[in-house]
Amino acid sequence: MPAIKFVCPDGSQVVIGQCMEKCIHAQRCMFLPTLRAIAKSLDRGLKEPTVTELLCGVRETYLKKTTDYAVRPQDQLYAIHGSAVHTINEGYTAGNMLSEERIYDDITSGKFDLYGQIIDLNDKTLGDYKVTSSYKLMRALGYYKVDVSTGEIYKTGIKKGQVKTKKEWRTDGVRFLLEWAIQLNYYRMLLESKGFKVERMEIQAMCRDYSLRVAAERNIRKPVYVIHINKISDHWIKRYMNAKAKKLNIALEKGLMPELCTVKERWKNRKCMEYCAVAESCTFGRMIKRQMKAVA
Image (cartoon, rainbow, N blue to C red; front, side, top):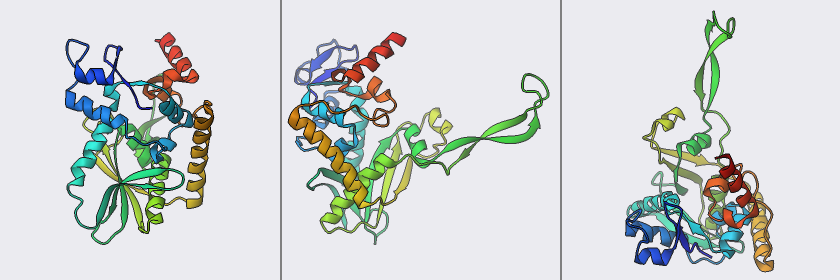
């Protein structure tokens, strides 16, 4: 089921159709065209789970397909920003390029952003647009800080005799790219199943908070980064996605709540606290939200 309600800035809820007709408050929180774009983005009319849905926790996807839920329009803005980026670029994909095509297989379906001559005029590249935060971009690029000796010694205070250090950036850390890598590799497999050879995979990541000081503090110095994605074993990708699809389909057929999303899928419970639209329909999500309110 798609989302059926919007959550207003004051916490009240309104049926999306009613919101489109007339705002229940004295003033709208945003323009009608923006609200309409958000409403459209919430329901793509696809019954079978997509690649992006399978990358989420099985319980989250199950609840989104079986329960009515409400979303905050403000939380969906970055999603339509991403769609806007796609739309802007679509007008310049002339030549040997494919874009926004949905391909199906016996497990799922996926709509890739770009394929073809998107880097050079003689390549076969699979590309994906991402609009993301400086924090996620910092982790995706493998940036981290280390303490480096300044060559000086503290002469007074509780640190007397200890070596003074300063923070320096390193760019050779672990790159937290697995979710993006799985997504692009599955798109690659879908394309190759239709006879299109993929020679490389790239992500064009746009930093949505690039102009803020926090981005500079995370060593994000540019608004756009192109990130290379390595090939992952077809066998492993197929097994992983098939396992998640099977769990979801069994849950949907039997009407049984799937197992709890993994710690990684829950973002160490941060997603449950603030970003999961169906947290109120999940026993664990409700518990986390109660704990958050108790602490506040």
